[in-house]
Length: 316
Ligand SMILES: N[C@@H](CCC(=O)N[C@@H](CS)C(=O)NCC(=O)O)C(=O)O
Image 1 (cartoon, protein in one colour):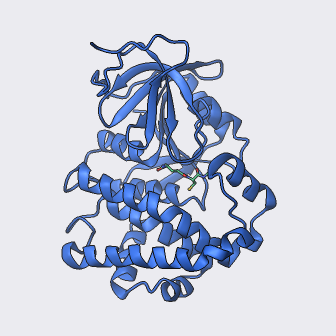
Image 2: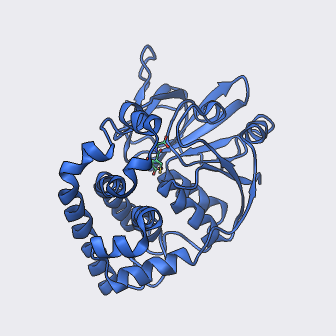
C-alpha cells in the first residue's frame, strides 16, 4: 500500500483529529504542510478544488473531510478500531459537535487572539469559507452567547463521560472523542489552558479526558513536499477497495456529478461517479499533473447531484 499522506497545517483542529487517529492506529504517515490561506495549487490539483483541510491521500485516492478520512483509515488498518460501538453513535456525536461548536469556538478564540490574525486570513475566511466576519470587533457583541454555547455543550460532554466514561462511547476511544476534543484543543492551545478551563468552566473530568486524548500523540511522521505528493498520485492508480454501487438516490455509476459541502466553502467538485453507498461517494477526475484520481467524500453534510448538462442517470 502507498503511504498515508496528510495535507494539513499545525493549527487546524480538524487536522488534529486525524493526526491523533494516525497516532492511535500506530500508522507511519507522511505530512504535507499547506498554507493556512490559499492559494494551494498542488492540493487543488488533487482535490478538484475542494478547499478545506485536512485532506488525506493514499496514492491516487484522495479523501476530503474527516468523516470519510476516518472511514478510509478503518479500511487501511481495522485495529484498533475508531468505532468500538459502531459508526452511528460516533458520527452523530461528531456531526453535532462540529456543527454546533465551530462558530462559538471561533468567537471565543478571536476574543483572545483576534488582534494577531492577519487581515488576509480574516478576509479569506469571510469571503471563501464561513461567509461571516471573524474579526475580533465583529464577533465581540456575541461573545457572551459563544461562551454560553460552549459551556452548555461542554456540560453535555461531562454528562456523557459520567455515564459512559472514560471515553464518550465507553471504555475505548472512538471518533467521537477525537472530534469533541478538537475545538477545545484549539482554544486551550491558543488561549492558554487555564484561561479556557476557567472561562468555559471545564470540569476536572473533561480536563482528564482531554489529557488522555492528547497522550495518544501523532505517531511516526515524516515530512513530504506538495510536489512529491503530486508525483505520488501521478505514479499511482486508484486502489481503494471501496467499490459499492448503491447510491441511495438512484444515481448510476458513470454519471457526471458535482459534490459540494452543504455548510461552508461550498465549492462544487465535478467528476464521474465511480462508487457510492449511503456513507461515501467517490468520483473520478483526470488532471494533467496527476492522471486519473479518485476523490472520496462523505454523504452526510454533502450534496451529490447530476452535473449541469449531464443527463441525470438514475435507477428507475
Ligand atoms: N467538515 C470538514 C471541516 C474541515 C474544516 O472546516 N477545516 C478548516 C480548518 S480546521 C478549514 O478548512 N478552514 C479553511 C481552510 O483552511 O481553507 C471536515 O470534517 O474535514
